[in-house]
Structures are given as structure tokens and as C-alpha cells.
Image 1 (cartoon, rainbow, N blue to C red):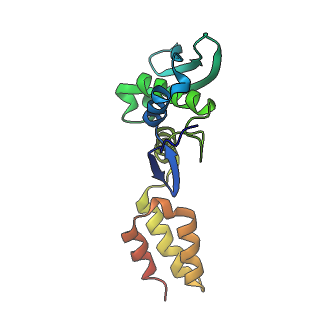
Image 2: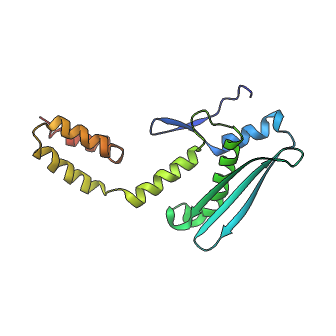
Image 3: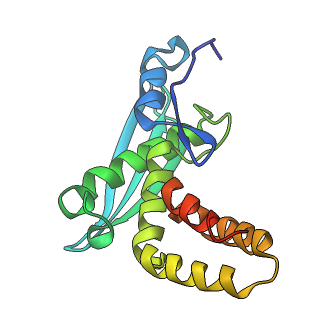
Amino acid sequence: MSNYKFKTTNIRGKQYVEVNERIKFFRQEKKYDGWGIHTDINMLDGEQCLCKCTIVNGSGEVMAQGHAHEVKSSSNINKTSHVENCETSAVGRALAILGIGIDTSIASANEVQDAIAKQETSTSVPTENIMDKAVTYIKSQTNKEKAFESIVTKYGDQLTDKQKAGLKKFVR
């Protein structure tokens, strides 16, 4: 592989390559001259999309495949673009299976951001409830520092720095 430097996005302390970077590399790298990226929509209804991407060499031989699934109601962006997101994810996964941009993960930055957004909209506790419960918990504990650390470990990614600083005031 060449000395190509992939632009990455930091998500929760880990670097991920974006799909557009994988595509750029694939199109610029001489060893992939004549190769193709083919996408197929395997399922599309009013609510969801399933897409397959196939990477073929110059002879038409399948070298890698990737799949993706998107649900229209899963995020604000998917309300208008779930098909496009599905295709982009499938392409990113196929290029990753081919070995492009996988130094830290097969998942692309786009996929990870989408997955986090879906988790947060479906499973996150409202921040107000976390704060109320956290304050009550810290006040009730003898070892307030340990209680604070426990809350930050469990809910830290859902709390702002200002909220963490506010909770820290209850640790004395």
C-alpha cells in the first residue's frame, strides 16, 4: 500500500476513517485502476433499506462485499436520506473489507457516528434525570469522591463538562 495519509475523525478517543477518504484512496491508487464499485438495493420499502456493495477487479472478479441497513425513522438525517446513508455505509464497509482505511477499525467514522446517534435516541436517559439521580446518589454516599467517579464512569459521555463540574461541587 502507498504512503497515503487517511484523514480521520476522532470519536470518543478513537480515530475512524471516513467513507469519502476510502473512496478517494480507491480511485487514486494505481493498483485499483479498472476496478469498480457496484451497489444494489436489496430491500427498499417505506421504512427501511438494505444495500449491498460489491468491489470488482478489472476482470469483474468479486474482491470484496459490504452490506448496510438503515431505518428511515432512526435519525433526523435518515428521514430524508436513509437510502443514501445505506449506500454510503455499504460502500465504506466493502472498501474496508478490501483493506482500505482499517488501521483502527473496519467501521467508518460515518457508521460509528450513526450508531452512537441511534443508541442515544433509543436508550439514553434524559440528562435532567441523570443529574437528579446523580446529586441524590452523591449526597447519600459516605465516600462522595467514589460516588462521583462511579457516575462519571457510567454516564460521563452523556454529561457536559459544566454538568460534571456542577456534580463535583457535591464532593467534599
